[in-house]
Structures are given as C-alpha cells and as structure tokens.
Image 1 (tube, rainbow, N blue to C red):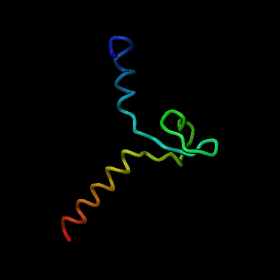
Image 2: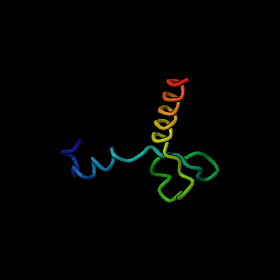
Image 3: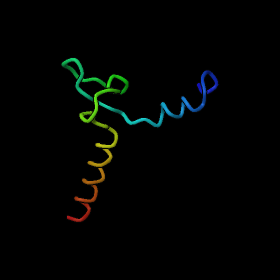
Length: 61
C-alpha cells in the first residue's frame, strides 16, 4: 500500500485517532468529524483510559 502513495500519507492515516461526533442528526465517524470541534470524541483514547482506570481500580480493591 505504501508503494501506491507516499509513505508520509500512509503513516499519517494510521496515526490518527478513531473519532466519533454528531453530524446531520446522526453519528459520524473519522473524516466526517474533521470540523466538529470540541464535541469530537476520540474513541480509542476513551477506551484505553477507561480500561486502565478499571484495571487499577480493581487491582487495589
């Protein structure tokens, strides 16, 4: 795949967060959320944070 385009474009595509936002009355993902601003949720960051929080919470109880 990197041979078809430039390498920096391929890397930038795979280093972006999975995003979710409200657009046109429904949920939109990734590139549709480019101009959503503050109300864009980064799904992978949220899942990682909640997972680590749960891990440490139940580890020390």
